[in-house]
Image (spheres, protein in one colour):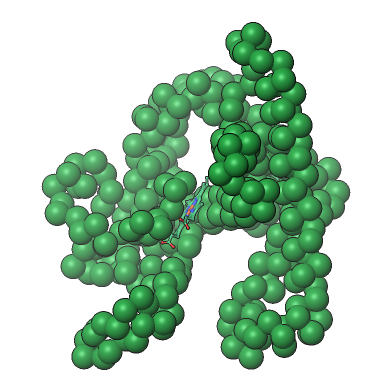
Length: 312
Ligand code: HEM
């Protein structure tokens, strides 16, 4: 099975181009990484490529990508500014009005994706099972559409899931790749080991697409990614509303309180990770993981419990 053949190739070509243009000078990769993960999640889960990498390579504006970045910045400012929390204040300010305008662009994009899929899905259903073998593979969105036909989900329910998947499925992976690249670039010894592992898998064939089987052999790279997610968890904060009073270190935490779990702090516990500031991928080597008595709460980049990450 080939995974993300086209996407990864576009990204690699783009990097080659950047390096040539910049004469080896440092360059911020975040935009291209984020465009790549957005194209991957829209194509793999929704069956429609967002075209973010193409826009980037051709230097043309992509309203959806632009709106995602701008809305994220407004949300971050609002989170840090309690006076902006009440909707009746926020909605009257320029940033609130811009936020609502941007949401219309984002929702318009997801609605277009759903509509496109719905049309294809209905046409295929109408043709019946006779052409089953010619059908394209089902994606996540097809399952939601089947649920809608079975009257288990409304159009609004589907829209909510699609919006959630697009955001949670691209921003998180983009952060993880970005930090991992940064750490690999900062530690030449780690970079050399990752390089050797990849060379051993692909030998001299630079054109061959990466397969699922290949990824099973990238064991050192996997340790590097895990150690990178320990130091820089792509989702650094998780919020929960307390359902019943409880006592924590002598303090009563009341029902209804919002608590925020700070993942970078949890990942710095020296009883789980000795010398926690050190970037050491070997902590996650298969033998180290086997020999350790890991607490299930010591390393939680995907959270734990009933609402943990379904993309894990
Ligand atoms: C490195 C990549 C990722 C990281 C670090 C990550 C991390 C997280 C975290 C910390 C949560 C919060 C869970 C909680 O509140 O307890 C979450 C939720 C979620 N993630 Fe991810 N995620 C990643 C990739 C993905 C991908 C690729 C998808 C989709 C394919 C995805 C879909 C979701 C969804 C739908 C939820 C909400 C689950 C719920 O509320 O029940 N995530 N993720």
